[in-house]
Length: 361
Image (cartoon, rainbow, N blue to C red):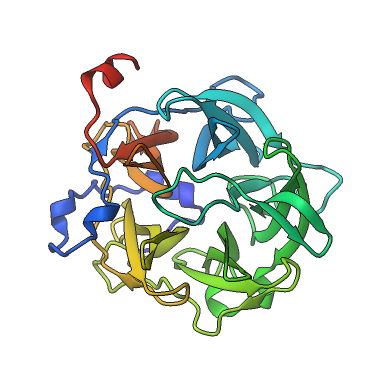
């Protein structure tokens, strides 16, 4: 099966959503499960002509800062990606605060796109994800984010690069230099780089990212990691990719993408999404003893919903935080019918939603 030239092209595929029981049963760690979907968008496109978020919102990153919850998201207006910010007091009701990183026509890297996907935060899966200040050569107690940017106009057009962004207050951001380029990597990543996930552990910085092997139809995406001591010089891990495509018929046969890597007790949890050979994207998880080795269960952690539901087409692109003992797993939900799909952000939780929570929506 040939894959469309863009990820969004998968919406046009004629495959039917496959229920989770299409995959053989296997153990997924109970401590990572969030089986209770809200089944509604918590943030959707504005549908306002000319707005930065007119067409869709995507790629949530949820964090805690100064007593509030915040979510960065990637918005598409028909020209390219820009980065938005929303706030919440309860992780259910979100206020769109507008764009915080905009395209820059004078910048050859950011001329059409700038999609910030991660801010350095607490590593602990069971934390609220408070973002962390960094001091490094040339950086004095700043917040550090990571973005990716495509070189051309349109939806993910061209081979994207990864760079860093900086903030004094965690709310207002300035895009900084490019740190990873696809042409400098191995064959599996030469087609372009996708979502970065930035961690600090043991005095070193780890940048996880997914990438595609080429830009023509039928590409595959996998996930690797690069390491730095100063945020400037990065060394790709020799064992990349660490999240690999599975065999034909598996849930990640085509994509093993959009890493969200967090510490879960004595091991690491690698949340990611898989794309199967029928064009269905769903949330998966791998676990490992360190930041270079992960075992993929390839069993859906969050599956697509019923046809026509809020996530009946895709349930993918994870961001996970904890609050009051509950895990909240935010993800990009694509639903409706495939000719007129709606792309927004939803959430699933480790504890069932109460009637009061649902009635307040």
